[in-house]
Image (cartoon, rainbow, N blue to C red; front, side):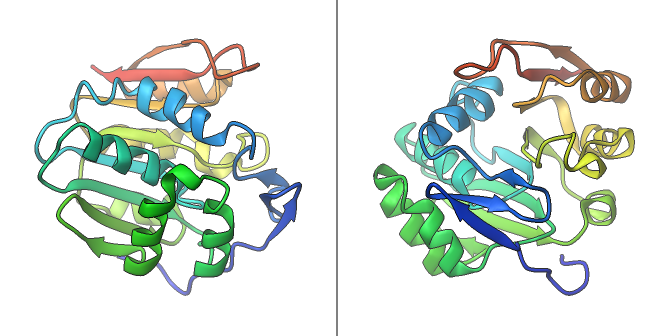
Length: 221
């Protein structure tokens, strides 16, 4: 499901990292972006311990696809033989060349990056079922008919992109989460945590990655 014509990512490169000119915010750190993805999104959702057949991850902000590749690698290394279901909502997709340049920073993910770039944003393999929904999540998320076991909330900073962290979006996240499903995000902003609590999540503030004191994680109750 797409919503209207896709808009360009509109990015520039600073010290090897892609930066959104629209939001003046980097997609990841070239120094520890992969480690942060593993700590925040995988660890914050208690993965791979919760993996099971048919497990469904949903994400706000596909970006370069780094979180997907980290999860896909973990899924295969966990010995899964069925597809990981992965749905991501992205308003401003990178083109293939931009994704290739961004993901080249992570040689250990090169095999997964090659498969993603060959398959595109809608793909199915023996171990992955990917659906990137293009458009404004304020419209596309409420219209989505799926439910996720785990959410990666990875939009640009709430200070730079408040629309993707609104109470309405957090409520839609909760409504599209399975019973006892989880979320994780790098931000510990108070208004985001309050919106997630109001939406029905039991929210905690685990230690953040690196120099970040806290992140947020939670379980739907």
